[in-house]
Amino acid sequence: MRILVIEDEVKLARFIERGLREEGYSVDVVADGDEGLHAAMETDYDLVVLDVMLPGRDGFQVLRGMRKAGRDTRVLMLTALDGVTDRVQGLEQGADDYLGKPFAYAEFLARVKALLRRGRERAPGRLMVADLALDRRTRQVTRGGKPVSLTVKEYAVLEYLMQRVDEVVSRTALAEHVWDEHYEPMSNTIDVTVYHLRQKVDRGFTVRLVHTIRGAGYSLRVVEAGAGVAEGEVS
Image 1 (cartoon, one colour):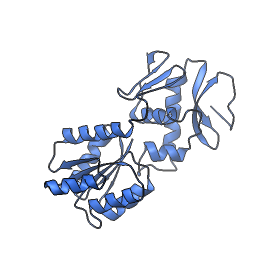
Image 2 (cartoon, rainbow, N blue to C red):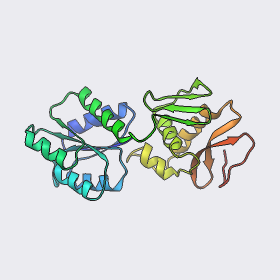
Image 3 (spheres, one colour):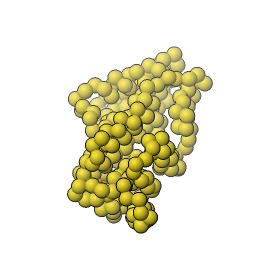
C-alpha cells in the first residue's frame, strides 16, 4: 500500500512517515500544495493524508483539483482548524475523513487503516491461487495449509501479484505500488525480493506459482514443474 502525505510541518511529517513505514506502508512526503497535487495526479496512491494549511494551494484546493480530475483516492484531511464549518467544507468537497490537530497517533493510524479497508471494499478479503492463500485482514499467508513467513515487502509483492493472476506485472508497476519515491531504478531490490518470495512460496512444491518473465517482469500463475511459460519465463 502506498500513501502520500502532504504536510508542511516538518516534524509532524517525519513522525507520520516513520510511523506509517513501521506499519509496512510505502510513504511519499511533500510539503506544499502545488507539489502535492502534482504527486496525487501522477501516482496511483491508496491514500492521501492532506493538511489544510499549506504553502501554495491549500488542502481544499488540492482536494478540489483531485476530485475535478476524477481522482477517487481516499483522502484523510488534517487541520488545526477545529470549526465545524471547516470540517463540513472538507467533507463536502470530497474528503473521506477529517482529523483535527493535535491528535493521538493511535487514532490517526486507526483512521488510516479504516480508510484503506474502505478503499478495498469491493476486493475480496481472502485471495487464493491453487493452494496458496492470503488473508488481507490478518496478513497471514499459507501454502498447502502451512504458514509462509514473509517480510513486509514480500507480502506486498505477493498481494499485488495475486490480484493480477496470469498477468505479467512489470518492475515499474511493482516499484510504483510497493516501493516509494526513494526506490533506486538501477538497483536489484525488486529482483532480490521476488527471488526470496519465490523460495518461500514455491520451494518443495511441484506446482510453481511465482515466475520471472524475461524482459517483461513477473507473473503469478499455476505451472506444473517442468512445464514452460510463454513470454520467456526464466525461473
